[in-house]
Amino acid sequence: MKFYGNKFLIAFSFAFAVLLLSCKTGHSIGAIDIPTSEALQIDSSKIYSEPYRPQFHFSPEKKWMNDPNGLVFYKGIYHLFYQYYPEDIVWGPMHWGHATSTDLIHWQNKKIALFPDKLGLIFSGSAVVDINNTSGLGTIENPAMIAIFTYHNMEIEKAGGIKTQSQGLAYSLDEGETWKKYEGNPIIANPNLKDFRDPNVFWNKETNTWNLILVAGDHAQFYTSKNLINWNLESEFGKGIGEHGGVWECPNLFKIKVENSNEEKWVLLISVNPGAPNGGSGTQYFVGDFDGKNFKTTQKETKWFDNGADNYAGVTYNDEPNTKRIFIGWMSNWSYARDTPTKNWRSAMTVPREILLSKMEDNYVLKNAPVEQLKSQLKNDFSKMELVLKPNQMTTFNYNNLNQSQIKFKADAKNLKLVFSNEVKDSLVLNYDSKQKTFSVDRSHSGIVNFESSFGKLIHTTATPNLISETLDYQIILDWSSIEIFLNGGVYSFTEQIFPKKPYTKLTIQSDEKQLIKNISIQEIKGTR
Image 1 (cartoon, rainbow, N blue to C red):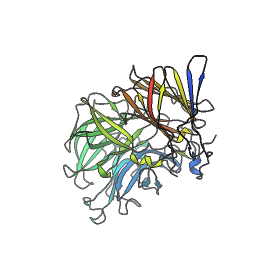
Image 2: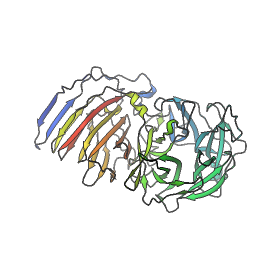
Image 3: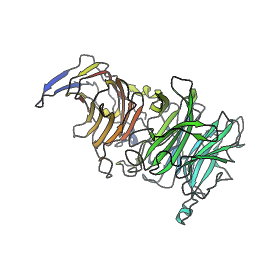
Image 4: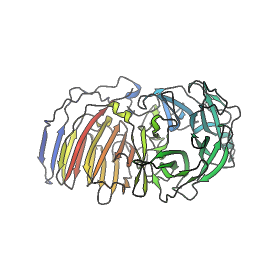
């Protein structure tokens, strides 16, 4: 089984050949063929023509990857560090991998940034640029890029000890190309906690102080520092609040303006594993206030950043220009991350997303949608049209390869089912139930699903009370082994891995109600290799 590149030109006009047929059930079927003038071509890159290799999501050139780390923007460059094991395609002794980009879409692989040492493996953390040289590790003319990360000491763990995790620091004086460990590591010693990790660091402009947030089992701890080296514990948050089905991981705290207002709030992202609504790993968020030492919220219910099964450990960029808040997540789930059917490499990151905060009545909602830069990869706009679906009518769009495409349309806020399928009878089903106000993803027959017992069995159903408009905007992005769905500009998002035996070539839309669907667009997304 092999996937092929999707390099073809759609030559079309609005004079579509639409064939309406009758079937025994009395339903009508519309078939819209999207003509092509060029056959599918094999990708010229041997590596990125591997089965299920993402074409426009970041993935490691080889071997294992998990959490994004150290997201920092400096001198026009986006740095992406990540948990990396260079010896196998399953989790092992952690390093920090490194990649850079000027547009968040095209990535250049760099050499490994951080290696394990006598203090331990290199677990998750964050990165900043010490512009004012508060640490003294660089100069004003050449500030240091600082990485603060968790050490995990396997010798202590094997001996049955608790104090396996502490916080370390490394710095770079050549903009992330080479790194040196701080001689005084660890900079934060373990206070006798089994889980004590994932430091998230940022410069707080309001207090002129460095803040650090890490997780300590079932809660977060907040620290302050003047120099990135000496840290003071200020407060704790989270005991008895939010989801606690598993250990807390990968915190991220940032300030953000509420859309269409002058109000500003602080948002705290906390990943948890297990405990997510669809099983295994997921990321929750809290909206509140932060005075530089204490985070407080009046939020009672648990809120989820993404409602699919495969968006975990995500964090946002430090120093992103234009005050935007850009997020990248690990597109997997610890329930089956080690078992997915890929060779030579394993795991990918989500499409980079811009985060927005909206207020709906008295409810704060964190939205996320693909960054604007993704538009540069779109080509061959198939159509902009109106389509009227009669009750129980199905319309099918035939397309060479939907597994490298973006689909957008606006529909009435009524029942609607979307089915992606191929010639070998794989099918991925998306369903919006307007009466129950739920959206579901069924990947039980989406392709290869038997590599892990739970992967294809559960239909992921999410309550969607914040879809309150009379119409719904759908944005759907497919790569060779993933689907990302955004409703109403990211009021709800759903990220799911998929492994179809062949690319999907049909999209069937149907409803048991009369539906007006407008502004339908199917576009190829160019690969970035």
